[in-house]
Every structure is written in C-alpha cells, then in structure tokens.
Length: 584
Image (cartoon, rainbow, N blue to C red; front, side, top):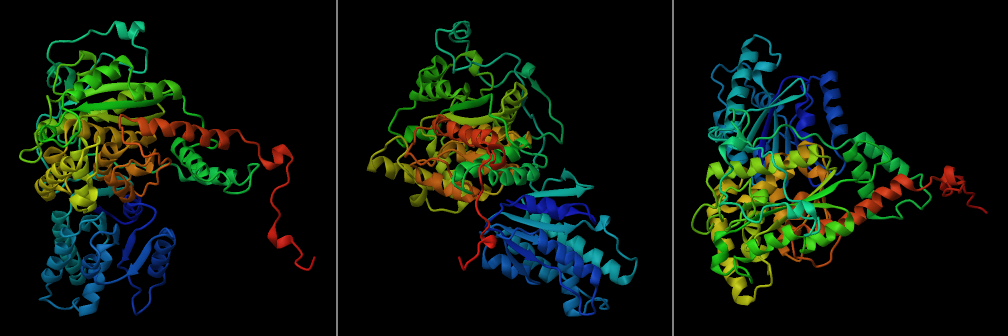
C-alpha cells in the first residue's frame, strides 16, 4: 500500500504516517537538512523527529529519495517529508533566483520510483494551501513546485489522506470508484449460535431450510453516500501505549524472575494495551465467526475434497458437530456461522448476508463483481459491529470453503511478492498431481491479480471470494472498533493482509494464534510482523487454531492481573547488581 499523507504545519501528519507502519523493519528516509547558514529552531525540529523514530527503524538522511526507493522497493518505508525535499533540492541547484527553474524531470523521477514501489510506502508532505509561505518569488516557486510534486505522487499512490487538526480525511486516489450500490447489510434477525448443542431450544426453533437465499434483500440494507464506501476506513488508532508501559512495569514487579513467563508476558501487555487498562480483565465474551463460501476454482481439482463438502460442513457447524464447535464449548467461546457464497441453499438464519452462490473461477474470470465485493466487505463490517455491540470483547474469524486455500495463496503471493512454487501447500491433503494443478491455478490467478495488487477492492474482486472479502472487512472493522482479534490460519491471515492495506495499522490489534502447516501462512505472518503463539502443524481452518490459542491468551491475562507483586507477598526481589561488593 502506497499512502500519501498531506497536512499543514503541526497537523500531526508525521505521527499519523509513522503509525501506519510496523514497529520493526522500517526504513526511514529523512529529507530535512540543516541549512549551511544555521537555523537552531529547524535543527531542534529535526532532532525531535529523530528521537521519536523507533530505535528498530533504519534511518537514512538523504536528498535522493528516488534512488533510495529504487535501491530497495520492498522494505516498508517512510519518507518524511516532500516539502523539505523540495526546499533541499532547490537549494542544491541554486534555483531560488532562477526565473526559468524547472523541476519536472526530478518530479517525474520520484513519482516513477513511487509507482514502482511494491512494499508498504508512506510519504509525508505539506499541503501547500495549509502551509505558511511568504508571498515572495521564492515562496511562489516553492508552492508551485510542491503542488506539482504532490499531484504527481498522489497519482502514483493507492491512498491519499489529509490531516487537519489531527483529524483524518480520506481523499481517495486517481483510481477512486463511484459510490454505486453500496450494500451495508443490517439484518434484524439473530444469527445461529453454533456453539449451542444441536437439540437446544434455540437451535430447534431455527427453520430447517428457507427458500433460496440470494443477495441481501433491499429492505435490509441502507443506501450509500459518496463517503461511505465499505473499502474506505477512517484512521485506525493504535492500542494504548500508556497501558502497555504500565503493564510492562507491572510484569517487573510480579513474584517471578523478569521474563520468566516468556511470550505470556508480551501477550498480557498486548491485551492491556488493547483494553487500555492495567491490569487487563479476562475476556468474558470471546466470539468466533465462521465465514463460508464456495469457489469456482475448486472444480479444477485443487482440493482433496469435492465442492459439495462446503454446504455439508456448514450444516455440521449449525448442528454443533465440528471441531470449531467443540473447541468453542471447551474454551467458552460463542461460534457464529455466516454463509457468504455457499453453492447451495442454507438456512435463512445464516444466509442473510449471502452475496451469491459460489465465487467465479479466478483462473479465467473475476471472482466477484465490484458490487458483490463491496457487499461482502460491508457484510463483514456489519457482522463485526453486531458482535461488538452485543458485548464481544475478543473476536476470531474462521472459514469454510473447499478450494479456499487457492485464492488465499494467490493473495499472499501477490502481497508478499512471492513465487507460486514457494507459497503453494497441500491444503486439505492433495497428492503431487493435485499440487501441480493447484500451482498452475495459483500462477494463473497471480497473473490476473497482479495489476490490482495495490488496490484492495480490485484485488478482492479479481482473485478472492465473497467470504474472504467479508473476513477482510470484519478484521479491519474490529481494529477500527478497538477490539482485539486472534487470527487463525492461512485463509484468515490472507484476508488480514488485505485488511491491513484497507485500514493501515489494523495489524496492531491482531494476535497470531498459530502457525499453519501451509507455507504461505508463515510468509503472510512475516509480512504482518506477527509471531504465532502455537505451532502444532494444524491446517484445518474453521477458527480452530485461534480457539486453541485462546486459553493461552487467557492464561497470560490471568498471570498479569492476579499474581502478587513482590511487595504484596513480602518476597525479596532480585538483587541490584550495582549494590553487590565484587571483593566479597
């Protein structure tokens, strides 16, 4: 995702841009330079920016942004900022007094480098109308050149935002889509709680099968406006850093050697930051939503199971007989099932968000239409809102769909710039011939999806599927609503890659539950900078890996919240090394 962040003086644009990138592995291209004549106030600003950058980032102070971008077009990069770069360039060539000064060549060069960049890129720039510029020939020169540069960079980016007084306004891009038929589905009836036993009164009251379900009916959706496109998200705030600092301090006061609980300590700190309080509270209403859908590519023999298994397993979920149901009951999590694109008639209670029957064969046609993709994203967002508004304090996504690891692998390959043979796994257990067929399908899908890799809506439309698009909306909306999520396996994490492109920073609200046996899953987790809690060679899906990790998360919270401190237990803490006499 290439993002241009515009804003005025002291608008918060730099801090916002920094928040779009991970805490580690980022390259920071700083364009400001201390003038030869000296400027203490400007030097102090540069120093403040240096201090704010995470120590784990690699800082490069440069005036040749285009060359640096081309030297490594995959590493997550922040450029801060273009205004300083314009001023520095004009300084370097003595252009302030040149009546015929022309920057078009270098503007073309840097915008070309931006358009060719394949990793996550955030570019900070002053919006010329919001900056204080003297009404002099030099001031007009700066405004003109910066305006031309901003326009060129905006055309090369996937997302453009304007920061005004700390508020984020989405401006769209040259590829902004018309707001046609936005289906924000809001059904009024409750969904099936598949955690319940199959003979419970609630389940028994559910109608066996309703008349054929199709696209969400008009009476259950609300109309769109130009500013309500479901693929457009407001600024995703980071988890509470103050709570995280307090939680880390408390870990050092508990009756244990520092770091002795390993990953449990970091998980507890993450939960505290998500809840915004220390000590954190145990999760009382964890919920997993299983998104189901069929895929046209399954007919090409990419799975060990036939396509009709999807509908059969959805019935099994509704009856409470699948692994996700068992794990949900054991670990106190509610399970909800939603049919987005199952190629069969399913109960009305789980098909009210249904977009279509089966997504298209992505090797030769688009998986969805634009309207269907938006309907699916909107459904995912609505489902997240419904669960959070009903009290869910921890969300998980699961999936069911024969052949769904094929589109998931395509998404991972495109968004991590990986080759098909590197990302293709065995899925449900295919043999060598099946693996060859699947690799061919992934290759063809990646070829079709590559032109759209940096535009989430178009990528989902071309090579994903309705349930994957819905999961992307679900995960991004959970982050927007400041609700933590435990990610499951390959298919969910592929949706998470797209969700983090739609809502940059969403990954801060996610925890990787486990590492799947699928090779593409490890590649996707590395792209998201997430380290899984468990590695049990699981590859079932359904949300089973996330649910298996749930008791580990609850254990982490319990230790931080309920263990005694050294002072409370009257236990001596570790000795201060500086107080020990080395001669004794």
